[in-house]
Length: 371
Image 1: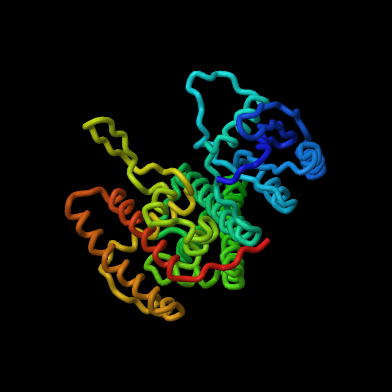
Image 2 (image 1 turned 90 degrees about the vertical axis):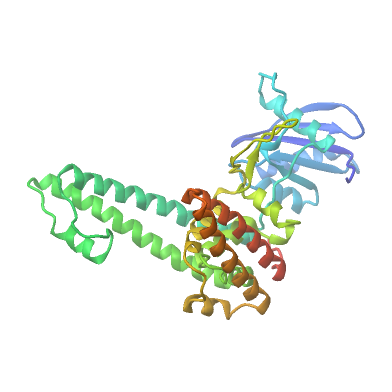
């Protein structure tokens, strides 16, 4: 572990930053004060703390303020770590929490090497991630709008007799729905227009994701992942944007644990107790993996769509994708025959799918980082 002369703990908030410094080799840990959360104030802080040839290392908790401070300090040439809040050691009996105490704790633990840093995406990767997350947010708004429209229709006894909603037939039926009072007709039309507006925005974001993914440096990895069954363009883009370089994981189980699809465990002595999956780490990737796992309930076969996507990749990736499909389709039927619930089966398949994603990541060159 590299040694630094000073370890700086930053308790970052929207407007302010509480700062503490721990001297190297068991030196004192002192509270510096509070500064404004602005680039200018951070520059002044660095000059104030350095005082000569001091080698500085900064740390702060990951949070809603993003990675601006990390990038500014890294640009200035200083070491900086963004740490995982859930993995910070805490005393169970400590009931006092202030900004000052938090910054002192960060500086002390940073010097001791007890903090776990998170992966920080580069600029291009964060932009792609923001795009996929915006699409998820818009999809959530669309679901809410549809639920409100259906609830309004049900409240007034208007029921669609067809099999599938939100098809052309369903929209034609909506156009023919009439209410006795003009005000209710206006309310109904507002609900319908809200659903249509959200749908148009999702379609626009889908096109933007498609073009942005194809033009990005991550396209070879996205294209390789699309050879897997159940992994379309949106799923592959989400995986790459959220995880980053797949080679940063030493093994497939490490990636599975990072995504929270491994069983939780509470064992002591001769007693072993395992529960549901941990659900730690990145929930966006975990969700798309479970969605992709549903496709393995069907028998393994090379469809025309999969063959078209696989042709764009190397033979090694194609072999991994076919091996993944044959194994997981067989395993899905096996677990289902044992009486496992479908959600449990899909979770198990999602865990194995993460392992094959890791394998494809090792077989593909990773893009160079951008600013």
